[in-house]
Length: 102
Image (cartoon, rainbow, N blue to C red; front, side):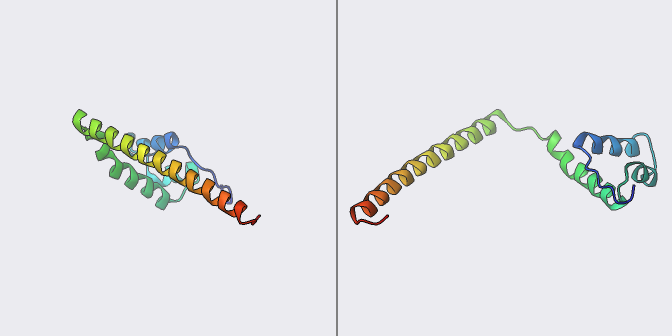
């Protein structure tokens, strides 16, 4: 498979990792079969284990609500900022027109 780069989907990567971890297929065999370098395989495995902890963490409803409120507040602040910028742009254009600038 030399010279052929193929991107595997997340689902495909998970299947490759599962075959190694559950079915005990050797890394060398999987890498040859899928045309990947062992370093790529081990990087996927590292990402899997680093991200696994987040699957087991629970957020409390209170924390979820606080986060949603924070997001709403930030969105409102962003809307206000956009409104102010729009007004300033209008004033800027009007001033340029009054001064005879294109």
